[in-house]
Amino acid sequence: MNDLKDYYFFSSLNDKELKKLKEISFSKKFSKGDILFYKDEKSKYLHLLSKGVVKVYKHDFKDNEIVIHHINAISFIAEIANYEEIPFPANCAFETEGEVIFIDYEKFKEEFLYKKEIAMLFIKSLSQKIIYLEKFINSSVSVDVAAKVAKFIYDNEKSLDSIKQLKIAEILNIREETLSRKISALVKKGIIKKEKRNIKIVNHEKLLQEFI
Image (tube, rainbow, N blue to C red; front, top):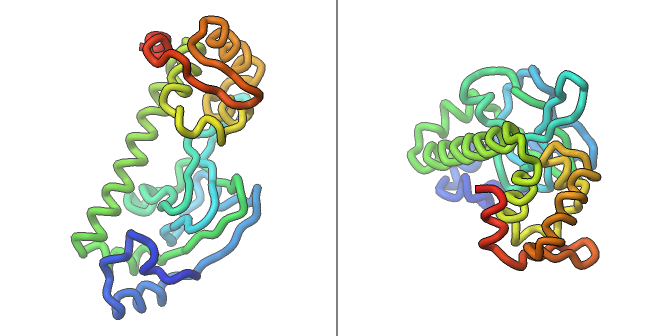
């Protein structure tokens, strides 16, 4: 396990506090495809993703996988389940090799959540998850698939080169063939251009008009 002081969540802790935190923590490495936890499981641990990428997902009534969120290190995972003392609301699996630091939540709450700096970072992390969930819900209830695709491209311009088309379809909960058609339509309109697997926005204003 790396030095906990390297993680910005705990950078305000002194040596004595860091030693205490280390005593109530342990780390575990995971391979791509490994399950971190399943929906409805309970956990006594706070999960800090220190390396890798995980996906939080559910299954619909047809047993189709619905990806709710991709989480990159360094970040807490499903900390709302700890905070509200409820079972995990979804499944979590590794998209890459990774590592998680498991922190005994009850002891963490007693020893560290009273500290202003830690509490504020914890609340901020919770807020970010809520904002992402709100965006996911808004996107999911949209019946206009073309608008969903256009908005995703607009919102993720800087990272488009690193996201495979299959992964975009998974995030948007649509078929890859459907995504290809919508992208082709935007190319024909001159709004975006596609060079091999790379998508570039040509006209931001017109792209914005596709979903507002």
